[in-house]
Image (cartoon, rainbow, N blue to C red; front, side, top):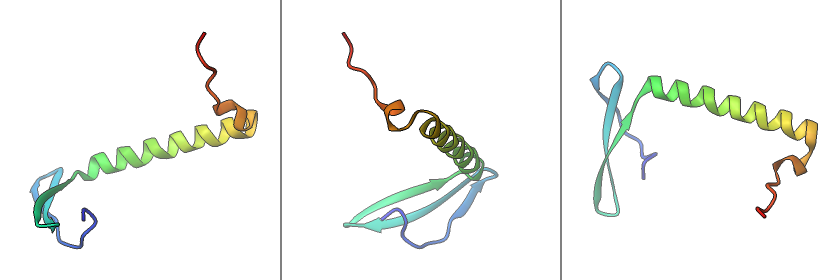
Length: 68
């Protein structure tokens, strides 16, 4: 539903919104282009860290020991 086609309308310099309908319900979807860029950069950093850890330690590097 949230990926439904439609045009965003700018309501502020850093905020766009669109209306979507699904299952008889109306939703307002917001989009912040600046936040999108920051989020994409952070996800790329997390993936790079995970790939590095995997290369260095293998899958066991992601296992969390049980407490106690």
